[in-house]
Amino acid sequence: MTGKVVTFGEILLRLSTPRHERFSQARQFDVIYGGSECNVAVSLAHFGHSASYLTAVPPNDIGQAALNFIRQYGVDTSHVVSRGRRLGAYFLEIGAGSRSSKVVYDRAGSAASEMRPGMLDWQAIFSGRDWFHFSGITCAISDSAAATVAEGAAAARAAGLTVSCDFNYRATLWPADKARQVMGPIMKDVNVAIGSGRDPVLQGLISMDGNIPPAKRSPEAYRPFIEAAVRTLGFKKVALTVRDIHSTDRNTWLGVFYDGGGISQSRTHELDIIDRVGGGDGFTAGIIHAILSGYDRQRAIEFAVASGALAHTIHGDFNLVTVDEVESLVKAAGGDVRR
Image (tube, rainbow, N blue to C red; front, side, top):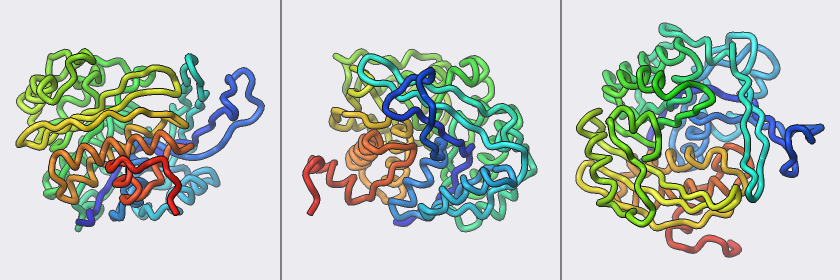
């Protein structure tokens, strides 16, 4: 099934250091655009879905450049609001080996952070649509943006759309206590929860420690955590990523999915990382695609994890892969030359 998905979040100017340089070394930056919900929209468009992206950009050349960048991948931006003085940005120092990557945000006072309830015509936006997606990052950028997310989630639920949330906690944007306070009430309108079992917001909302020791990882090991989330917050489906970090360039990665009838776990992927930013968004787009396409539980989590794994191999925020390429990795055919 081809779905019609709406995502809402902040588009950011990304300025990353070339050649794994430190910020103090850099004399130039690579310029692209990205942002969690935008990344999901682009990935879903590559999977053949109709993807519409909501944000606000300033009415200047930088705002227009951001929209042009998104549109080239087939994402609808017809409901984007033109307002504000500046586009949010982030600086990325790409690490290597034992040196971690670093992110410095510059998004205070951005156009998206000044979004407020009443600014978007949700009825028109959701007409004929199937799905609404947002993340905790958008809730974090300002109180008014969080209130706009809450307005949109409630409108989507009332219109009969499936509503998904990737918790996506960022400690540099807000403390966990405030994140739980703000996001907790919005969860009543969320059907599909996406994130990590280590996410402090999700853990706090269900009053449970989700850190599962590696030796005990299995679908049943996650059952108490997922059942607590479903019981406490009313989710219909829960998809979690599990990551072990061996170095900046080398991680292991798997996923767990509860679909209302049971829990399945994917196989483990060994990741040789080109660019970690957007990996989780690749997983999110994968699970949304799988649910919209009617995949069974095991196929769904294998597809989502493979989608996220491929996102780690592509420079930039966007997961520029097709369904066929993801399915090839699911079938363990990745790595060979495609002729």
